[in-house]
Image (cartoon, rainbow, N blue to C red; front, side, top):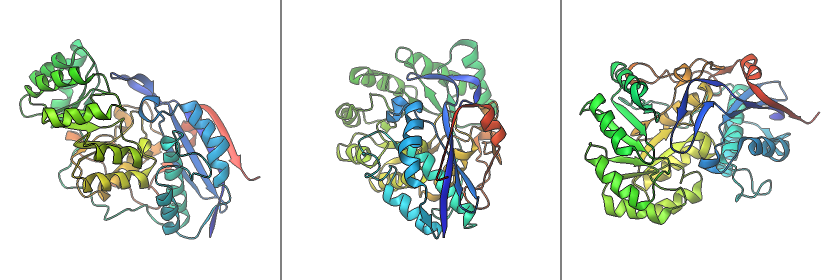
Length: 385
């Protein structure tokens, strides 16, 4: 039997090598939260989340406070005798804190993602077991997509040329409200006819704009359109699915069980972007994938911009457990971050080839706390002492 002794909570801002921007935001640092869980045997495990107001309605400072004052104190003293018990507890929570602790109506899936990962890692270490959801076999032939930020001019040309030279076959374009067609045509010209291009509008359009742009971009061979409308415009998304005949992918519209069921019931998308940090952790993200596949949807397993190799390791475990993944985004590592505090580095290789699967107990990673402290913008210690 192992007991949760305490936590250390960090607000971290790891700098990017280059700014990343799209229609909903522009950022130069990770703007994330790191969580360390400590057991009574002094075993430690780590979690991570990246709260985004425009994704789940969570702001980092509020998430930090929510974890510090409400969620983490409730976890201290909890006992588990096996990894099966840990997974069962997280499965019951399903991406949110128990409702007796925090109303399920309060945005919290990013906060709970940090808890989910920290518990899985800590007790995996404690019981000397790797985190495993299924067969842990990475799908044959799956490659990570390149992601093209909303750049222009020579910088854009250089980025796209690098994608070609680095052997990528898929790219997701982050388009802006007024320049989507221009950007798509330019990308098709540079990348060539065989490149699989899809578009992420990040909620930039209304229904009329989406219908017009989707039709125009389909002329450039683009069939997949991620979050073309505002997250809560479910009726509009349903209209696009029924009237365009193109792939409509839900991203910001999906974060918990209720939001996924609404999308399914209203036929408001044909595919979903499942991200561990926005969906309430590894266990909940796995549940979202299984339900979406059951509903006949295409699965993209994505990431929040700025994830370290901690979340990338968890993502690899998720991808290996899901029956069919069509698109994968993430494992950026030092392609994006100036430093990655997690080892081994989980970073895609040539052509988007995936890194090695995690090995060892827990998430199969170790964390350099010196780097975490170097980029910390705030720290809290929560314990029963």
